[in-house]
Amino acid sequence: MSLFKTTTLAAALTTGLLLSAAAQAHPKLITSNPADGSNSVAPAKIELHFSENLTTQFSGAKLIMTDMPGMPNSPMGIKATISGSDDPKTMVIKPASPLSSGSYKVEWRAVSSDTHPMTGNFSFKVK
Ligand SMILES: [Cu+2]
Image (cartoon, rainbow, N blue to C red; front, side, top):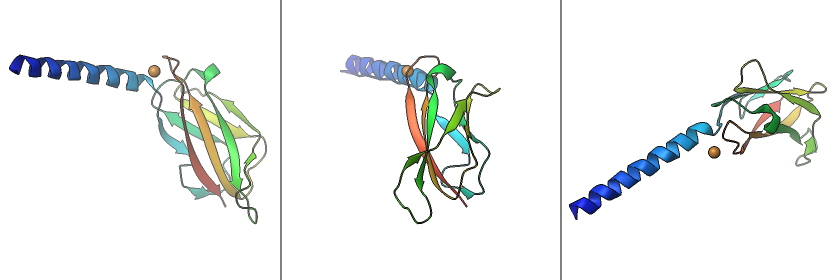
């Protein structure tokens, strides 16, 4: 009984360690500028700061305008350049032309050294 419990606990600890090691290799979005839920003047660029160094050739993002004044729920892709940065944990989205007033969503895909793609999104508004 007590031996079984010890074994189970050891297995659980090992699994926990493996999971946390894998989780550490998976890029998570820490912050962005503009921030999720923000409402500000049009940014010249959007910066995404991740928890891990990005493998830029497999990472990317889509910028979508989700609402514009008078036209709710009319998603439209926005032309933008996606690139890395001097900081290997940062992804930069540069819209081809200034963002007009409306609501935007960024759908990101981030790949780090272990090649597993992580995805997520956040939204912001431009006044
Ligand atoms: Cu992984």
